[in-house]
Length: 189
Image 1: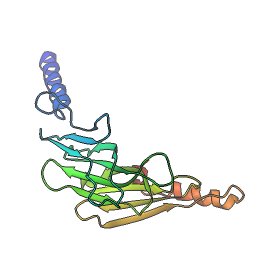
Image 2 (image 1 turned 45 degrees about the vertical axis):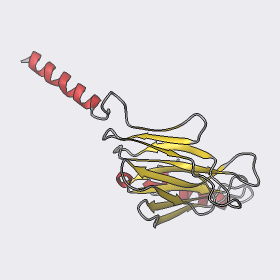
Image 3 (image 1 turned 180 degrees about the horizontal axis):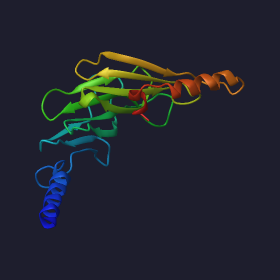
Image 4 (image 1 turned 120 degrees about the vertical axis):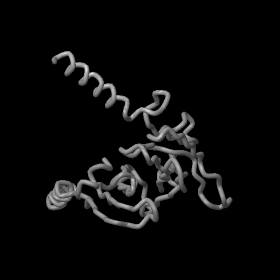
């Protein structure tokens, strides 16, 4: 009896360990190339899809210069990354939007609120994304947006207020906002 139990446990563990692997032994992943110009996703169904930096459409408009923070949804059916753009006032590019795509179907571009996106995550099985935005320097204030991927619709909005070192009440308000934040806010950190 113990041999049968041991054999069943071994088979179950092998099955569980390989359940997230693709044909050929590849784990689902979302990876940015070394030069930051290409995003490659290996989805849970075995498909591979590549996305290159968007070409400039208008000579006067800022053009994308790379990707950052590539992620795969927990279900391994959606991938995404922040899109990096030049910034007039820094020596480095900043993320102003997010690109999300599945193994099949269209590419979705999700805009923040005009501020730099400093963190993001998938929610609700890859149907929604949460974004953390803020100015680049000088404040602790942050804004969090929950958007639906299919149309970019704003589903929820939450904010951490800025703090003033000379005002203890501002620290208390900030701490309360962090403590009371919904779960979708915390996943962006």
